[in-house]
Length: 341
Image (cartoon, rainbow, N blue to C red; front, side, top):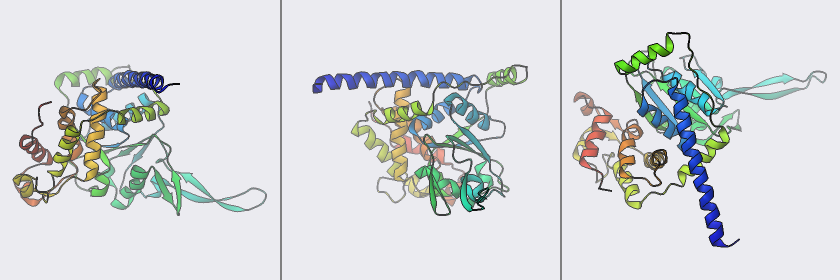
């Protein structure tokens, strides 16, 4: 086969993969919206995390359907789903699994047998993750980064795809343990769930106070999702757009010469290199979801807040002036507006 013929074949195959991606994305979203009312932006952000292969931290008040969203998404994806309810007495072995001694019938020979924990799944819901001590929270670190966990010196691989979708309540501080910065940095998004509008609340009542039970149906599978993640990485991004993403991330560091004065005044620690990686990857996924085949400045600016808000650490001066991470990021976008496309 000639090189030109091979290129045509590759292009046709890629177009088919992109078409399947977009069809599956619409089908997944439709299934999720059969159960989840409103929260369009939240659903889009979780979908981006899915297609990038990242993990997502969902922060919301009680009763905002955080757990229901994760369970519904797992049903629509057709993936293996496990849930861990994080409590103060939860141990690391309750997450990773443990080795037990088993005795063979007849011979009486004793052997170590590994019993996998709930972490060996495709979609892991870490419900109220900030209610368990850091020792147990850290049991997720290796799995989130390396897709494996180590028990008694033996490494056990977690089969892809693997997503950790963690929830936390922002208002109940008693009996909670803030997530370590190293773990926060491994979440691609910190998604904020807010109250619904009045019309959406009426629709929730129609769905949940009658005999009708809304459920999502599986519309894809693990093999397709892994292929979608590869397709996303093939989306091109111009050097100028990638440079803008890098400049935004670097400007969050008070020690960087490009940081604005208000960043030097209010920020102790800025975002890491991982933030720039996630910003570019997530923008590629968003572009494909919007039926575009290249990344724009709009993708970068739209995803900047949920990707960076949990990666910058404010100082006491910011707290005394009642400034949040979103306030700082908003001012940063004003100080560094995107160039015209």
